[in-house]
Image 1 (cartoon, rainbow, N blue to C red):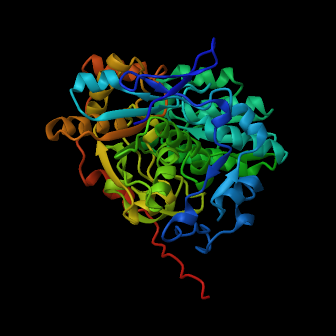
Image 2: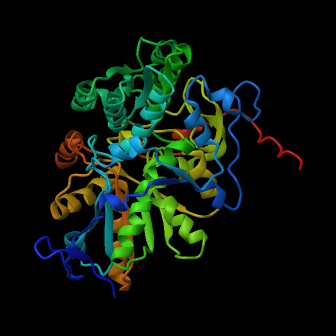
Image 3: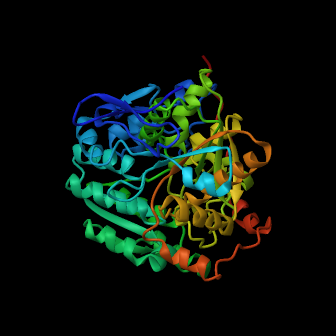
Length: 478
């Protein structure tokens, strides 16, 4: 039987918090993890290698140097289980980390469920989401390497905001291509990026060859993360003083986010809880990986046995409807080929409100883990997400970004199932950001204008036909 121990500032003695009423579980700064966790050494088999787009052979660090600093490249291919977090990064992290873990007691009461719901809240960061967990180290390593500017893409605007913030801290210029539909719908996200000092373009733009070419097709006018990536990569590749920074998908990005799950493990241990179900929203996969990977490590080592479930939008279902093949990470075909669950690099998702999840592929590492059968996935329509969000807002008092509403919807589904069965499951999710800049989405829901588009195989057929026919290279002989 575990309880929280709280220090009484007057007596300096420890007093016990009532386990029936505690709402948040906090860690002291001294308890913040000082290493990122790399799951690859603990997996039954390594993920397939990325391939050069021209030769279709595995790429090495020299192939990535036009885009990334060597420190990040070495993290991308690392076989070490743990990587030390540099002190300058820890110093910035302490501005908001460790982040709180909440028990959703009022939501549980509303649902009438015996389940216990916990959420790790990343909206306390300066950018309002989990994204600074990787933008800060990426800016640090680029500044250390002597770069003057970073380029990137952003969907919902959370990643662009995070990189703008981190760039300001480390003296870098920041140039952002924001997906057109998000740029139009979220002007205050653009203004926040510009407030941090970034230069922001609507994508597709007239600033790049890729933008001009792809923007000429009317179906691309609303943009996509794939198009915005093409534009940012093009500019970085053509300028020696410029590096490209990616907000999700790649191994080193997922690595940086594992501080979320490492903290959550410590926080749940303080109250003697072990999760039965871990749910997280997935677009490129960094938020999900950040929460889930440390718990998957514990599962692989036999110390706990949670189900780990990814939640994606029904209109962009790369895990549940995509194919597991080598494909480009961008629309123009400028990036390495990676083996992932993909809807095709030409796929343009419906302009749903969860702009951060509108990506045609899934992180290769998550795709590999999914293929290994170590996790499950489900696709959720956006109206169900916002129905759950309204229950969450009106009980927990936090307006979630549209992206984590997918995980909230699954947590609500599971909690209601527990109500039927009487199971006292422990459900853990990541509330990866607040929705203060997404109120237009809530307006659409409250005004009855939000709709779920019918999902048919024809939606994905054309884009899937453009996936290159590339075979995984044979493993080298020992």
